[in-house]
Image (cartoon, rainbow over all chains, first blue to last red; front, top):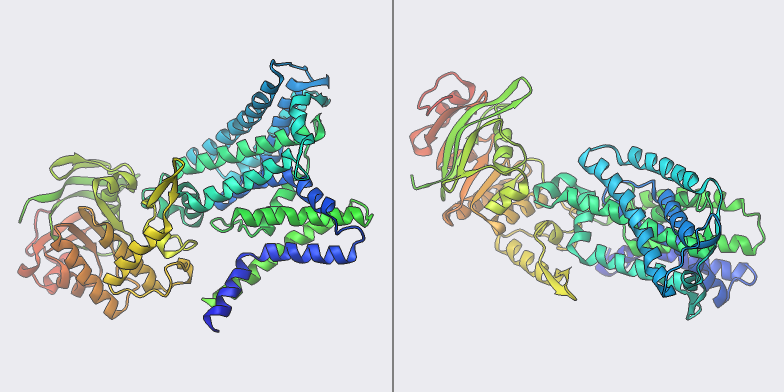
Length: 331
Length: 254
């Protein structure tokens, strides 16, 4: 094999999920009526913003060789906290701040803090007490959702303060600001992972924790930061979710965790840790969203989505194994 | 012998009721190569881990450059100038050669106050270091998982030569190397020692020990069973010390 085909092949393998996305978009554009419109594409990006943000945090922790199952519940708790404070009907307290725009940073910080705290709690137990991340975050997944039910009493908050809602309504080049926030998050965290020592260390910790410890990298500190970030990012996802639904219900975001997992795996992140990039994860998120949109447009019952997502995850894992064999031949 | 770099004074390590090290005392001078020999389970690796900050001793003390020294983590040992090459390689196979070479010590430049990896500078350094050691690796940007065992070990060896420090600990560094690469590795050790760096090398191969070491320290059942200058002993005598048949030419035994 000559070097040029080899480089081309490596490039395709590295960015396979983007090619899949492109392929799916082309196929849908040809076969699904009304699919090929700017509005549809904008909708795909818009609909994927909450899932996208949540997937970033999940991907960070998985790349570092751990697991965070709590992101969905953390997002719900953050959304509920924002909802209770700043919604004016239902269980909302309708807190007013002056000037009104002050509610934006306050609600955002609240959401980030709620998420960051739970992330710190998870991180502490996993890293310092050396318990399995799977079990700890599974527990958090359950008790945090329970907390949402407790503080809401199973009821919902509606009518989020207009100053905060503004982010979901105001559009820039056809996309609401919430979607731009998600895109910005991907850009920022992709750069952090690819270009900074912190990101490099996370990838290496996921690859060989012992080696990084021996090399003098502060493994525990980095891992706790990763968990705190995953929590805080989930909090941001919750904030976006509250804006999107203009409030919060007790079962807000149920099922998002598995979609986030699907996106992360489809995006090329290995559950063994150390492998995967955030642009890939974004492509995974968009791919799921593109398929959902197609299902909606074709008028298929929404129940099909879950079947298709499941098969897609399966396909992604098989594809990953296939990619590995090709890479070994290349080496 | 010139002034000691590291002195171990009655260092012990217990795992529960098991005494892995029963009291080890010896010293390493600047620019000196000490071969640490001993049968399997004699406590060589435990000793290396204690010096390198991977384990804490149960009792005893160490002096590094004349000062009381105890590394609570590998990071502390590194900061003091102690580099270690472990038996099981310490490479992250999921990243490339450059990233492994600079693991934990990346060159960065500030962009808007944020440290950003300076890949070009790092690649240049690695290219130079590998070239001067005669190691050939097709691309510095290949992930280490695609490299052979010998290439991996070469990266580790070049890494310690490059970073140097004051004391280098090598735990069976040539296990995966071929004849020619081993010879080059031994040259590297000499070269490092000539810069005034102390070297402790653990090996099973008597011939290597006699080729490179100034002094041979034998550990048996957690105590120093022999501490002799290379030119005052013979492989047979050392084997006897390892197996415990005689204590001929032995230094202070615990």
